Image 1: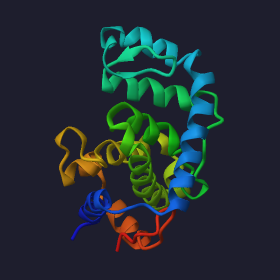
Image 2: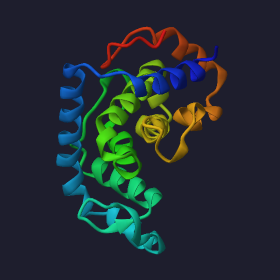
Image 3: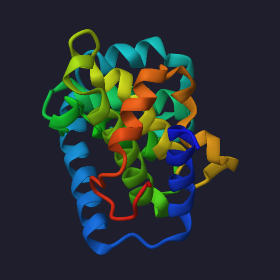
Image 4: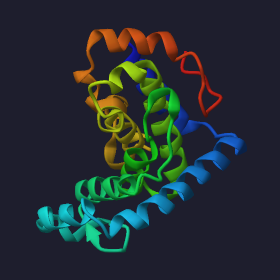
Length: 201
């Protein structure tokens, strides 16, 4: 089984399991922290510039921007993730030089049913921080880890609760672009649980 299949299988399996109270506590803290970073960034560029650029996707749709404006799911996820990272006060996963909250929670808020929000956050964090740990500091030499690794957290969070007919593969949709060396490194690290006790192995 490929590492992506293991991630996706674990993510789907969590749909039928209760998350431990300590995990839910930390997921709530991550969501609160995300909001604290989101609001200052929502009124500043680049979030305000994205609102202008994506004007056709605003004032309609099922999702909302930080200050309440309606938006399509795509626009809300992008603008809110950008806003949450703008003030540079968002969370950090040091092992991966990665800010998991901005992309992961923005996607979860935009797409998942609110009753499954914390589960989506946990799944997104678990998968993306493992990838972040595998890629680490060497990746940061050339790339901004939040941009390259954040897509995995966003995809996993968005598909975690099965909203809108998501299938197992949807949990790690962008992973087809992952180079084989990255997959090998990730395979070697996924045995360490970071937030959630259920093992990916």
